[in-house]
Length: 419
Ligand code: PGA
Ligand code: ZN
Image (cartoon, rainbow, N blue to C red):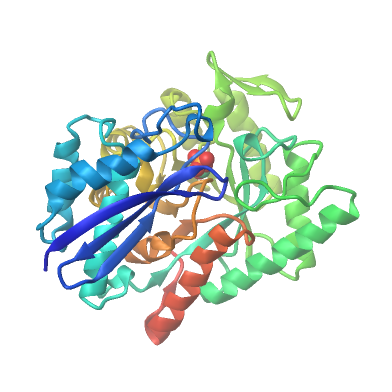
């Protein structure tokens, strides 16, 4: 089995911004295709997403240079390689790039090739992607964290915090979890509408109402869970991703939109702590900022024995930062995003490090997505029991949920659910 060719093209993501679709073809004609997502609240330490910077096209956001890097440099260099040697391919791509942050060829170019070759190799071996990447033990469907109210950089709402998610962790199967989430989402739409709020949605499909503040968002969500006939905290819980790096400047957290003023790390942690007694919150991601390692540690000391503390921007799916955070007890779980680090192999290494430390990990989409469903298979392959792939609305989010339904059905009796 050999790689015959790889070829990329410029397509659009769910925000209407350019991204890459990459197609790998093997010598027997088998094809693998991957489309790459893109973040809005990106961490400082993410690898480089190469954009053209040509103001005459897509406001500088075109990806023609990354496309050319795939079609010229990478295609010539990897033609004839064994597609089953994913680790060898990814190492080779990292060396071919030659920079510490994939800045020369672009992480979007490199990850597209890495994922497309994995898809082609799985197809050539006649295995579903989750089984190819995760082996025969890959049978655990993830609990979805569904982002039903959007704020921060994802919506023009009155909320500083980016994501208010429902987590149907009490469901017996993935299909039932999806139903719990979808029904709660529909009730939330009705409750917001009846209260005179907008039910237009943000980048990840959650509502983006102009509420009085974060607590009103939490109250709406609890009311929706109850009116949908579920028990808050038992059937459906809440997770937050404040994405605090986006409102952290000069050592303070500026809660400007919600009118709460400037806060220290300790003050923000105290707010979260107060909420744990009032709302069924089971997980907080990026409750503090990526450069606030000290604050993050104290935050985990204060809350980490009660709930999951997830590092996203602060860890950037990078084993260097995850190892430091394990050592310093900065969090107790990691968000895992393929395009924060740029190859399948490095992402798997990040997951393995979490697993060894007994950490939780959440396989995650980006706010700019495509209809690609790699993420659904990847979450099952990594068998951590958690995925974050948006609200129960918008085709690019639903595509992942529908793929997870398929996988659960295909696994039949073998399927497990949750962590
Ligand atoms: P992003 O947001 O994709 O815009 O970075 C997702 C997240 O912060 O988890
Ligand atoms: Zn995040």
